[in-house]
Length: 130
Image (cartoon, rainbow, N blue to C red):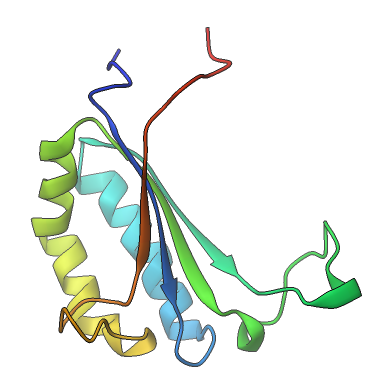
């Protein structure tokens, strides 16, 4: 079992240019499957779609929202350690995804070739796991 303080936990939000497309949805599913198959240092790699709720229409349990109102893709990731995280970033799976799908996301003007991502690195403080 890996010690929590060695692990890298993060949440990364990538804003979409024009909502979700079938092509991008399929590519994200393939990305997660490829990470699972080829990156043993990745403990968890989950991909979520995000739509913004405004006003009183914001309710829990709204079900699946239409692709055209999806505004971001959120990645929740956990790696064994920093080396595993860096291996993910440097690996063919991630690099190919960026090269082929970056046009679906807003690009970071200060880092060409990368999405305008808001990434939060997390430090585990407490858990209910025994």
